[in-house]
Length: 433
Image (cartoon, rainbow, N blue to C red; front, side, top):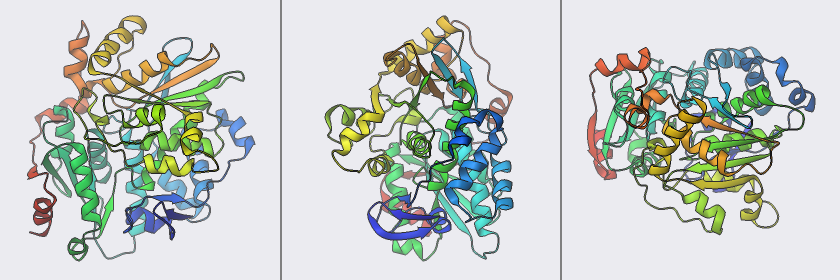
């Protein structure tokens, strides 16, 4: 498998290089040189495959023979060992539950796959790799769970102080061992900027071998494409047009869905559902891409004003004609306020009996606002367990929900974090000291 940098198409690397050194010096992002189409017979017979089996087939077609079949299947079977369940809420709206992994968020798929893949690539190397990851909430917890005590890897998580939920913060800060948390006095965009600066800093390169676990790493996007196939398998009917509503922040999840579509999954349309951080929905309406500082919302994992993966979306649609018009054919954007999100959590429970977290509620609202015709079947992604957002969910509902045991036990753990300003030089000094 070969990949190129979006900033320099002559910068071509193999999968190992792209995974272990995720951010090229030219500050682009790696993209596959070739996205293969899966056999039509596979698409038509998805119902015959278990989740890990179809995941293996998708990965093997994308990677070719880069990793031996036996090793790749071992990686998949260890990483994709929990379900992605579709729950029908109404006749034409379903929810894809992506919170059945260890950290109870969709990021578990990418983090566990990446941990297994990196372990495979580093198995014969005598060096330590340092994972730098910025998180607006769930990424850090999933990465910590996926990489905890993985030999040869240390993890440094940057998160915005006061802008993640209490449960999310405990998932970031209470591991110890090879996991360190940096509490940044700023917003997620500051954390993401500092990580990117560190990757291209010559002084730090002398001390560290860096890699990323954010969705700038192609190893995050590959496994996130798997559950689009799994969801399609569970709801497909011959006359349905399947639409995916994707709660979006850094847009890795939606990019993975587009990757699945390019590989042959017949997805009719995508909905890019955001909170007040509406950079991409505004682009889809106006044709002008204007990143802006992020603002804090109830759906904090989506508080991104300058989404990294937008460049990958552009790359997928940079064909003849207008890139903007090409993108609009497949993606419609929606954005919602905190008041709308709060009301949606309440309304979904009252009307369907289902309890959503704030991110899933935004995906649901986009489904409701789309629905071109009765044959459209809209699946929104429920990206985290509602128990991770107790304050919002319980205040919206008449009855309090209970926290799952695996989350409840975290609240007794001790928080350990290194406080740092949003000035990159301060962060660099900490890494060098």
